[in-house]
Length: 107
Image (cartoon, rainbow, N blue to C red; front, side, top):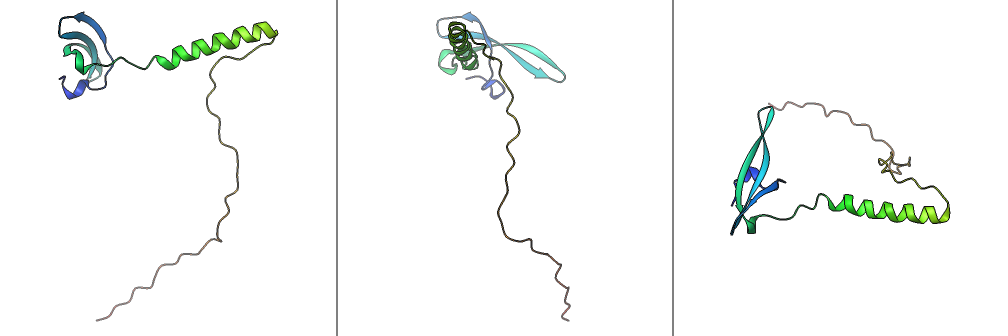
């Protein structure tokens, strides 16, 4: 099993053997990244899901573009950042004044 620094990291396979694979991982050391070559057994690796959302978006955009072309309309396909939330009123109690409690000495 690979060392804890490499858990969850995405790498590129460069070598395949009978029981393991060689993976190139970039490790941050100080102010730079060093290429590390790690040999890991196949039961400790998983396919990266980082590209799934991109591929789904490409397919969806192609469908939207095809539909828009058939209808003769234009469609905006770029992603938009989430804007600020709408204004709303918070119903609550009236404000309460907070004052410090007087210090009492009992000797």
